[in-house]
Image (cartoon, rainbow, N blue to C red; front, side, top):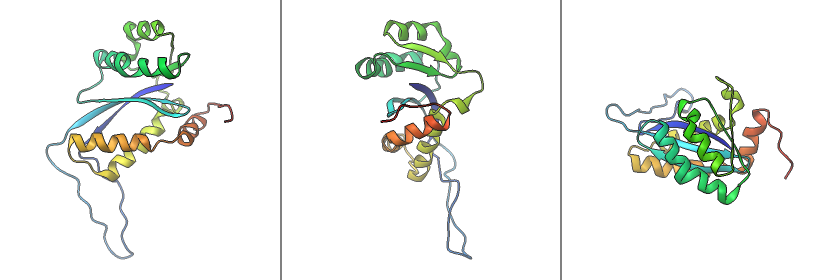
Length: 173
């Protein structure tokens, strides 16, 4: 189970456009006031296992709240022998994180520093953010609704492809 955070905003727009030959593609990006959400998520070989949003940066308090109220209850219910793998963000390395996971019977592994190519949740975030840019949500409520839809679009086949793309072998279904 890979854990990571991503930032999404209410001013996300598509980065490319198309128009008939000889015509200009028009689009706008909102200026001024926009809002940011931090999305904490967990990706397993079967897809997105858990997610939570918050309007602030991830710190140890936010991350332990994600563990206590979202991730650990879900993993204990569905995958009690899961191995939780994270990058080296300082809240991930907090002693309270390891204590909580081990108390729930889960194992914690940390990825090497600067190794996003080993984390299959990174390509998942790219897919989710592409869907959010297409949705062009301009309020926090609309962004959260679009995010739920975008996370639902991550299929088990996508997840297995993300794992294989990062070099992980998976058993055949």
